[in-house]
Length: 142
Image (cartoon, rainbow, N blue to C red; front, side, top):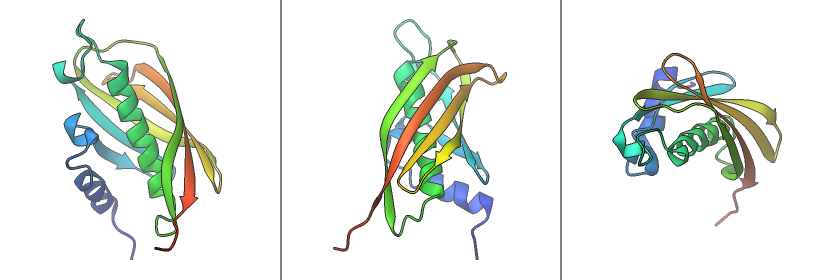
């Protein structure tokens, strides 16, 4: 029997313990048939020295959600997923609140996947537009 949405989200957040995602307080908050959404609080911990959200923290959020999306929609018994390219255009700055990353597929190939990750603020203003390419590689027998 497939897991409920709530169970999947709980498991996704559980496996983030002791990782960069936990350090940055990134959490998965929703997913659907072809998307996943996560959020990250904007606090001084993720600021640049001038008090705005650091682009590197934004990219960590974007890559985390894009990688999770590929992971969720890949047969992880047979394949493992790795990011191979990440790019972003930062369009607006944020000083506080939350930023949200919605990752959705542009292309779902057998070996490579292309995702668009839209990072928005609490008012749904576009903060960064990111693109992530992932690769699914076969697991080898040990």
